[in-house]
Image 1 (cartoon, helix red, strand yellow):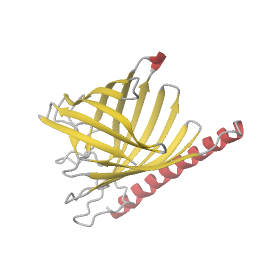
Image 2 (image 1 turned 180 degrees about the horizontal axis):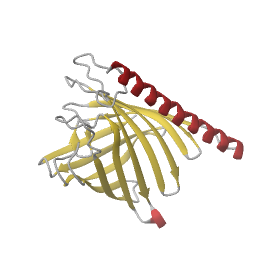
Image 3 (image 1 turned 135 degrees about the vertical axis):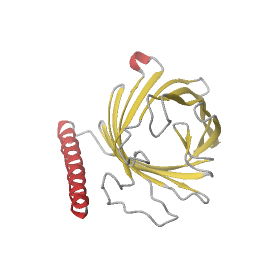
Image 4 (image 1 turned 120 degrees about the vertical axis):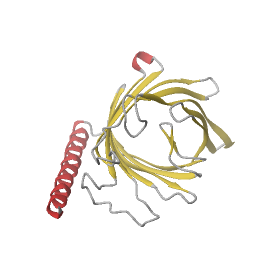
Length: 250
């Protein structure tokens, strides 16, 4: 068993190194192709009244969600996390790599959930039956010919997306269609519906799991300072849950 764990870990590290190496080569090519390209950096944080993701409540209290991002040309690499202010034991620290070209975005997400209650981190455990990592590949198509619609599709391919009984991967999938519009007062509106096509992380069978609307606006505090704020009304028809989430961006 130990030899298998070591083997799986080596394979995972090799895949990560290969992915990062390929990314660096592509980024280097972009720099040589156009010397005007510069790395854009971004760091920030959101304070949310509750962490709700794809119709699922992942916290019972407000959370702080920091992010760090580096963008060069069409490529972005960064990290995002969520730390609940309260008694929640499961936190989240993610890595992502994305490629965007016009209306198309391809993203590889590495979701990692440490359990602080039992002191479980083990970030470097990549055994497919034990790891706290979950690797998802997703695509987003948006604003084709200025049509204010976006379609997102994502599927888990490896890791912490397992059946509780068989411990086999579920390959959970999620699809979301959204309508987005910006009003003259710079108020941003979005309505969305998300489904899962079969039993997995989101539901026990095909079901609608995420329906709602969002409004976002920058509130002017002074001539040099604005405060982005958003509100989302979210319903999960499968679970019969409803949430209203407010977020402030720093």
